[in-house]
Image (tube, rainbow, N blue to C red; front, side, top):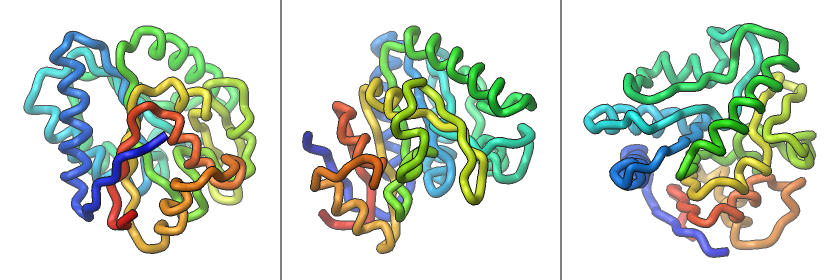
Length: 220
């Protein structure tokens, strides 16, 4: 498939694009399910919320692509960091991943929630980052999440215990927007023009989304 590239270093450029896409669907009376990543794309997500607050957004449901397991308010939580940065959408349905329960129960409950929300949604859109190792969401190279047959996978890594959507969810999206900045990521972005095993570079799975737009300082 082909994908669109927007060369920019401004988070607001990506945010405006996301907001425009969401509002176009909401204005058509559609129910929109929006997945947000943490990490480097938090700045974009916060700007998205700031812009969306100026418009009706009752039919919008928001959740995360992935989370770092722990107490719901632990500092490394993606959701906690979003809230700390000012993320707030009062009319939207917000679905955090962490529920102050053990990891297996948390994972199973998130699977059930996503099963329902994916059925209810008329349009499914995701904001993603890409790591220097080629990971996206919480799907690390050669990890359990790549071949997982469930919508959500949880597993231990050297840094965090992760709970993440799997490629099965990404393949159900109608649209994906990627925010990837920094020269250290250029090689991975360049590799999107090639066919590379997703076990080696999970971000390759994003090419299965019908509409894929990449915002980066890398010029393809």
